[in-house]
Length: 238
Image (cartoon, rainbow, N blue to C red; front, side, top):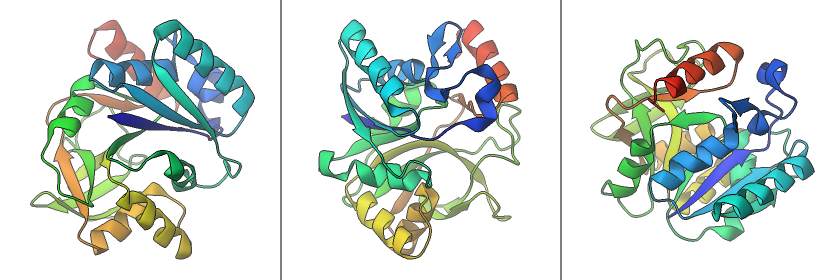
């Protein structure tokens, strides 16, 4: 299965660690290389990475990673990289006409999360989001993560500020091409985000969730999360 990685933004909250977020080393390895490595360990055999901010530098590094590791990486440039992340996903539409995984360049997750999403039963024309019901875990900031309300395996609503929620968005999805239809509809309504598309899919009864159970993940988007990720890597937990 292919994996699409969004890596187009500036990552300003982690700027003290490096100028280009996907290439910031964490325990000696660039962040995006760790994301690719975890997905590859789960069985992903091809990657598509959407670049934007300082694209030439990132694309050169991705080419070097591909040559060194033997992993196939297609590089896609998003000219509208300063818009929300859903625009980056839609940029890859022409490359994906079968089920695929979607994740972010700054989410370090247990490879078993990718493996579980790939192996889980899926319905045609649906998108499944990996969710974490451990909402009291200290690993991810509850004021910063994206919140999700779900019931009986169906995603009902998603957003940063919703008050009625029972799990967190891990940033790992198993998609079908219906995701692109939902992204287009959400953008037509004025919301460029992936979450906006998931809310559209919820309206269409095409949004599902996958419980990651006790598997670990960290959204490495600020220095505090970076430190937590380093600790997990030192302990061999990510």
